[in-house]
Image (cartoon, rainbow, N blue to C red; front, side):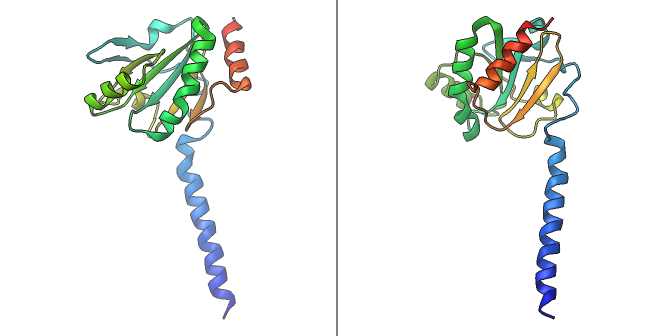
Length: 172
C-alpha cells in the first residue's frame, strides 16, 4: 500500500503539468497571428493617436505594456536602447494598457521614452492580438505580417534579435 501515495503524487504532478501545458497553448511560441497580417488598430489618448497601418513599410516592434508591470519596466531600458541604436530602421510602438491614466502619465514624466507610446485604456488593440499578460511583443515586417511573438521581458539589444530586425529591414 505504500506505493499508492507516491503513484498518486506522480500521477497528480503529471496531470498538473499537462494542464499547465494546455493552458499555455494560447500564449505559445506560435500563436495564431504569427504568419498573418497584423490586426490593424487605431488608439487615441489625450496626447496622440496612432494607427498601425500608418507604419506599413517599416519594421514594427509592437510592445504591449503597463506602467505597473515589473517585467515591462525590466525590459524597458533595452527596448529604448535598441530603438536608439536602430533609429529609423525599426519603429517601436509601445501601447500601454493602463486603466489609471494618471499613473501612465506619471510614469512617462518619470521615465522619458524615445519610442512612440500611447495608452489604450480599454485594451482594444491588445485584445485583437489575444494578449492577456504584459509585456507581450509582436515583430511585424514591412509588409504588415506578424513574424514573431515574445511573451515576457526581452533583452532587445541581444545581437540575435538585432540581427533578426536588420534582416527584416532589408527583406523585399
